[in-house]
Image (cartoon, rainbow, N blue to C red):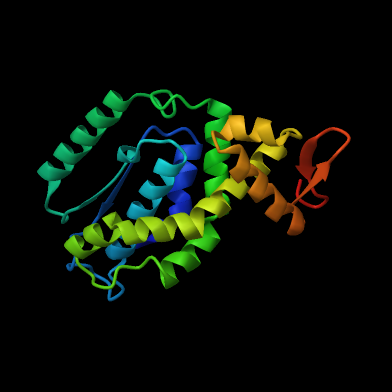
Length: 216
């Protein structure tokens, strides 16, 4: 299977299912058997997913991509051994990062909910202008892309994480802030926006937010 078929949702699902690390293997860049050069799509998905992992508190080194040919059996073994050793050093998913299992699962599920939106964002805003490994590395490591990612994704990711929390229980602004380690004023702004969009509603008698009808 072409590495370009390894969808962003597949990677996040693997982590949500409890995998401590994900290694993607693809053919060498610029040596793709298909005109689509799907391995560059896999590389872009890897960089984007690393940014997501960082923003939900996971070590992005838990995800890696390697490119090699069918004859690189020795290198394949070395790559797998090296990646396995790295993941063992990092420890179980979420434990080294100090994230509660339930919060980690909710964060990953919230990230998965954003995948359709992220596909559009990648196509329109987050696609490197030149297809080369160096160009991709520089593009996704740039401050401009980091700011763009913050503007386009962070707010939507926070909303998705809050919705995931509210599916479990009604919560106040301060409780949401504490659970997600967000600034209370930022949570209040997000909740006001979500209320106007009909995602949540405020219950003044209980001083908490609950999901709007149809969102459960």
